Image (cartoon, rainbow, N blue to C red):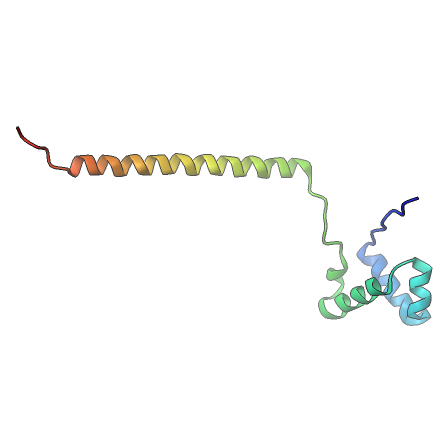
Length: 104
């Protein structure tokens, strides 16, 4: 039987850290079933970066937003290709106009 990974909110992490100060680290991590390394990482983040650092860094991206980002990237690439083609045509046109004609 596989164990499902628990994700903790920033408020839950903060509550666990405060509980550990009162009840002790060992008892608290056993009660909540977290690793000591995880607890100490949370505590380090809280002390150095504040409560905002405890928030989950992996946010699920809205599929519509993702689709729009991909479409935007594709349109930018198409525009860049068109601009490059125009630039090459302009350079070739300038070269052909600036070249002197040979008379027979």
